[in-house]
Length: 172
Image (tube, rainbow, N blue to C red; front, side, top):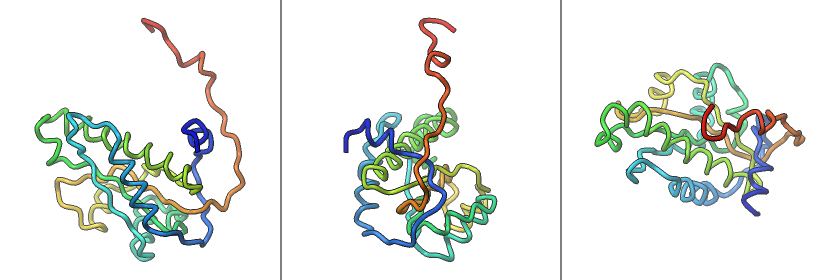
């Protein structure tokens, strides 16, 4: 699939089929996610792959009851690694590792689309609960929960703000 096609095909999926797929696909998706740019090439992000239904249920509960997370065969929790970004100090911890994670997240979403899979970037969750559920060390901060699976939704176009309203040349 062309990159442009993956970008146009990607949408937030909140209903998944009960169809499994090989975990090797997730490994490949994460290999591409790791190719995302990062501050100083420190790659201050880690990935927790969740397939256990009980853990997915706990994550969905921690994500303000977004139970569609449980439906997905695989859930990836993208985490910022504060220890790895430490050379950049406070700005690294507060911004760069989030940017690093966000770049990797977008790669995950696009690669999932490339494999014909649906996904959703879930950012609304209780960070402390997710950390506890996944037994994350104190220097690991969950940034996103991404359920991945075959979509059980009909594709629909989402409206976008006209690009002319968003572009500002040289100055605001």
